[in-house]
Amino acid sequence: MLSLVLPKGSLEKATLDLFDAADLTVRRSSDRDYHASIDDPRIDRVRFLRPQEIPSYLERGLFDLGISGRDWITETDANVVSLGELQYSKATANPVRVILAVPENAPWETVADLPEGILISTEFPSLTKRFLAEHGVKATVVPSYGATEAKVPDIVDAIVDLTETGSSLRKNGLRILDTLLTSYTELVACPPSYADDEKRSAMEDIALLLRGAIQARGNVLLKLNVPAAKLEAVSRMLPAMSSPTITTLASGDMNAVETVVPKRGVHMLIPALKAAGAQDILEIPISKIVE
Image (cartoon, rainbow, N blue to C red; front, side, top):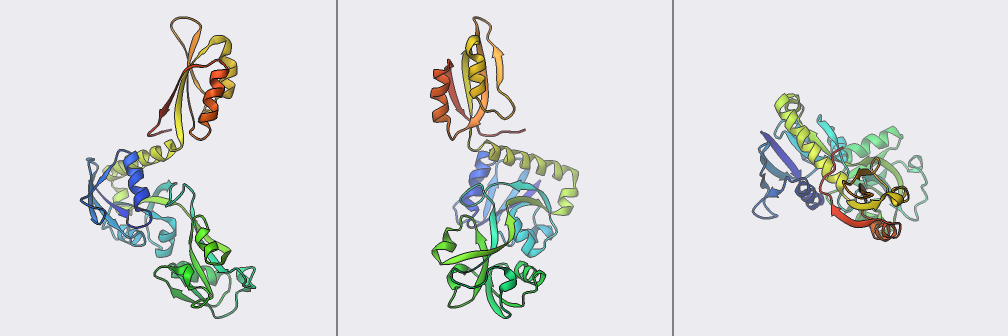
């Protein structure tokens, strides 16, 4: 039913991990294969392409559904329908930023300080030109095809580039002057495909599964038994998405308690719960959370 296009390159592994967690495992003969499949009746064709190409191909109707960053959607000015952000990226769950960076010792403090004729290298020439025009800066924008941060200062004066952690910028003696765009990865669709009721329903199912897998990351399910006399004290210790689920057991004065908690810190929480009177504590991994 749906043709799906996924990003090749830096987002590839994180995307494959997400689809696997959503029970939409992508299968292909090797990591160099641009053709793939997913054992799901809603998806009949899968391709891998560079993320900067994906919005334009979706706009032209060559695929129904795809994953791309807001950065490339903005750069290409493609007419696509967003089914929402998928909050993951190459190294973290944080968004990436398209930033303007200059040498650490450069005298400029704001965009307005940039001199006329400044040479700026970027993989986002359209986005950069629009940004500079909005700020009244007359610059020469040079398209870059990789290793953009390494071109300052001997080739260009400044760059517009992606950053997630900022470590590469610091390593190359650069500092951020301004942020052009904050970009999450998005699930996006071809507008005519999204207008088709059957395809839209399938797209929304896929989006639900992917969001559920992301929501589950970093969380575990705790199940424990608590004597009635200890229930109030234990309940106060438990974080939850809404509130813990508490069920009175059939015999005795015990209660069964279930709650979703962050994985980080659970090694401190479990001994504290035990000391407060909880028994039979189980920590269970979660694959999806669908709210």
